[in-house]
Length: 146
Image (cartoon, rainbow, N blue to C red; front, side, top):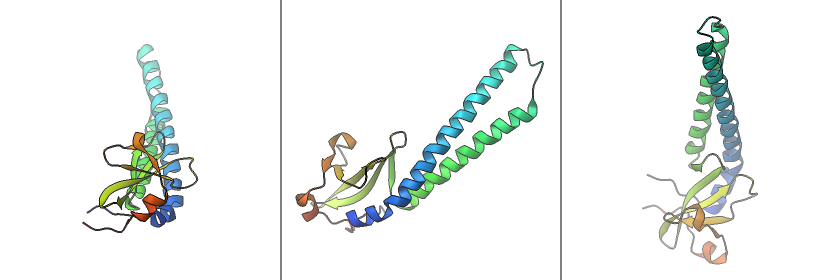
């Protein structure tokens, strides 16, 4: 069953979500860097006919890539455990489910924004973001259960 948030509940979770999101982005970048280094090294080995292979170096690169990938997965799982949804990791886009006017909508936050100031319908997504205003606050019940 999905978890619904009031605006206040979502904002209380925001510092931890942001910490985990920043960690996920760092781990993703580090995993990509290790992957690229591994690919370049493998290409060099192919070009040289496999004459000089530094197995320890290759093992270290693989190990770094795998550790970063694992840490990335752990950070994403942490965000999900808090009830938030990662919509676009690359731009740091997060949604929290809530209820407005009797329908399921999303409180929408993007990395770099100081607070949750937007919402959107399930159909419209990020492109349909609308500012959280008094009308939204009046018709908003995040603790709604189906």
